Length: 505
Figure 1 (cartoon, rainbow, N blue to C red):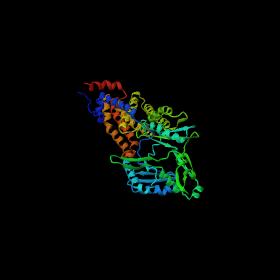
Figure 2 (cartoon, rainbow, N blue to C red):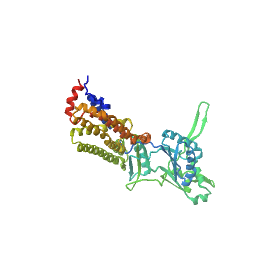
Figure 3 (tube, rainbow, N blue to C red):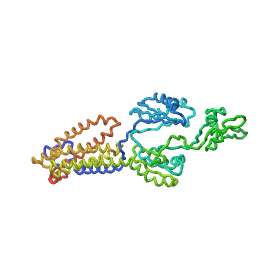
Figure 4 (cartoon, rainbow, N blue to C red):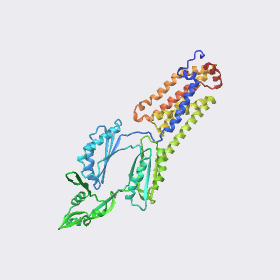
């Protein structure tokens, strides 16, 4: 049976003051959970924010910007404009390419937006040119998540048209399989193609037109069934691949007959092996290159992903010809590491300054140790909560924890001062702890509630809750630990001497 001093209540701290062993174990569990949670937290520059933005790309090689605007971009925009939840739409038409960027309301789920975009593309299919090489392709775009790493593949012996094929089949696919990699895109790629440059004078002399030649090339370059043979016992489908793969095959193509003689494509045009788009290219260190942009998966650890890619680079280089080199152009993790390191230093500095200022005012080492232990324990315990909330270690969350340092320690100072006042008046340490904590326990809780009320309206908005919840978690952790340290005061020996017989009787 516990013997308590008369008139002592303890308020909300009573249970923790009277159960020091259980409270110590609880705080140790919080510390352990925070340390383990820290190892599972991803590292990023900014919090993960899913912007409902979709980009639609349509390629039409050879078309001018005016043709792309009228024949491709305009029909797509008319269909996209009918979608519900669309906030903003912008487009860009250039030679052979159309890019439409769609931004939806923040309340619209991204998967629903994707379904609407796909339905609009299907509805616009009949309005688009029939000879489009591929239908429009849409992809999710996150303006706040740029590539984590940019690689360049160069060669002084192998043509860029062949280098791109190697990059697609050997390099990009392997990097895409790395844990944490979400998307690998190529820039400056030159896909191999056969380029036909017509001779206007030769065409006019033979009475031909460019449309006649285009139709002849399209009709001869197909891969379809030629017919079928139906027998009494079986039917056989006849098929042949008429697709031409080299410039020599195109040169020998018969496009017309004049005066009983065949007119071949090589007679009226210059046919050469080249790139699909000769105006597209990339350079690295003043040399032609294929640039790869690597983006991470949502929630992946940027630093761990970048380290895995760097470890794989020697293996990828061995699978390529010796003249093909893979170099790292940029790595976001360099800045992220430095930024997170600086923020962590500022957090440690803030804790040290808080403890130093407490000592300067209290002039009591035991009283300084109490909030000095409460601050790091409260902040470390917050990491366990961040894991369950799908937070990451980034500049904003670390800044929030830095700000929370002051909120965590302020109530500890107030309670210690109130308990010390009772001890100076002759009260025993246990009675002083119960009375001092009981008098202002609910006041401390109300102060925290009023402080958090300023952030609650923003926290209710789910898109920005990551900017306030770490601070609230830090406040809550500080309040919980504050209940434990109320058992101790400036004279720790007297506390144990008086409290132990009463508690463990």
